[in-house]
Length: 145
Image 1 (cartoon, rainbow, N blue to C red):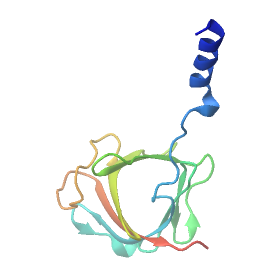
Image 2 (cartoon, rainbow, N blue to C red):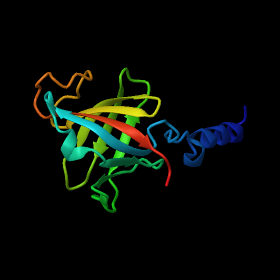
Image 3 (cartoon, rainbow, N blue to C red):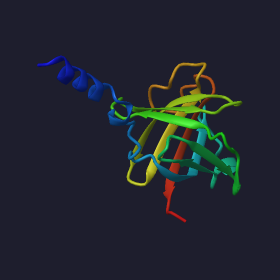
Image 4 (cartoon, rainbow, N blue to C red):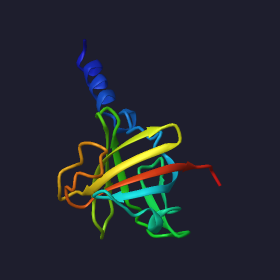
């Protein structure tokens, strides 16, 4: 091959607009309403039922508490690892606590278990392990408005 062909191939391989972009079509994207909330085996559902998480395709998320959006731009970010078993999620919230967790989706039900990123990621979905401030949320997908 000539140097010009090699250079062209190298340029194509490194071109930023041609590289694979992060997936944003995963099943977490959407609006989810809390139906159950626990921490260390204690039920906190009554204080959280109806609150909503919104995960956007661009990797940002927000939280609605009693019908009011609790975050504003710059939007907090999230990332997921779809190949992990169980799937992992990291929630970054500038000026607030960052969280790391695990999640699973079964139909229109999202189970999310997370804790402060300063501690190790939860390994399972049992909320009664008393490992510190670990949260377990069960959420239901909300139809588009």
